[in-house]
Length: 226
Image (cartoon, rainbow, N blue to C red; front, top):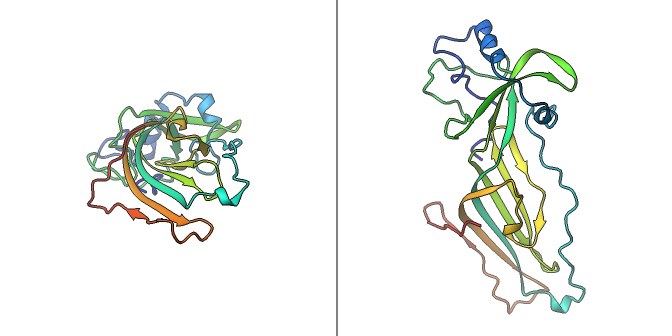
């Protein structure tokens, strides 16, 4: 997905065209406001991005006890979404960045196409003072995401999974049942495009029409925004 190399971010928004001087960078980062402690506590110590949501307990979609009542075909639908939700990620500007002196050029995975990006610094993490501050960004995107609805042969309803691609890495939301409208409340769907519909026969019922379909890259397969 488009933000797979997200930790290679440009500091052009913080430094001038001639700036790779570490002292100048540090002064710029230190001038930023401190990242709120409530958000800092949610950062993953490995990725320095907000942790993936706690999956919690998935509501049981109900099982079909009598195989004779199973549907003819299983159904798996994949959609490509553009969504908004707020997330934060931090990087070490003295270690992880590849600097580009041209301020009009975004590094791969930069958030130059997003709106409302807030910049901050992180000076304390897990109760310890950092030797140098981290540069943090908070944004609502929009981000690319994949939504999968999986209705197996012996389940009473589809299970939905949503995975978003952000500069801080992939975020997998807790799965849910009951329909697309039961998505996480923090997520706003802006666009929707169908990718594929896969049907497989249940119980070897060869008389069932279980044809699958895909949407080609040049086809307009827009779907309702829920």
